[in-house]
Image (cartoon, rainbow, N blue to C red; front, side, top):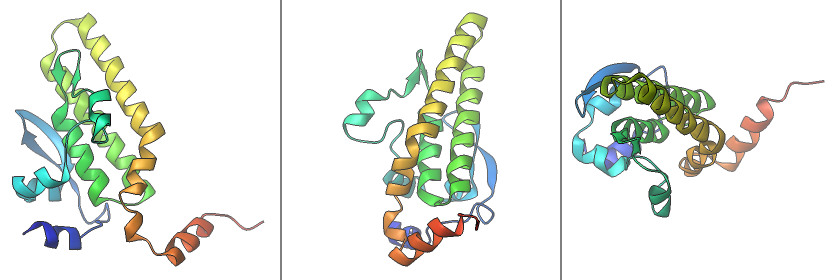
Length: 160
């Protein structure tokens, strides 16, 4: 598969791209099956680690008190790319939190440091929950026609 055929296959429904465990950077982490089945070359075109890219990468470090969470960020970037629904947004963020916690627990033996790192991980999670929606839907704006956006917005409004 090349990048063009991958892009043509987007978006994925969360029920057609199940979450499975695999190994990345020495950790057992959760990711959509498509992440594990896609070549590293294509993955490197899609993911960039923590932060929204550009100057934002400087503002959002790939570490939590000296532990790299870049693998969790890479999977989160992938999820933001392949899913494009509200359920996909929530699932992407939950996977991100779970994977960051797995990495921190695997790398931390001191209880005080563990609680500090897990608290920082929660801040990362809250940040993507609160502010990530803009980046999530911005990444998919070209997938929607005006009619789809219009009908999708109003299909959630309950009649009075």
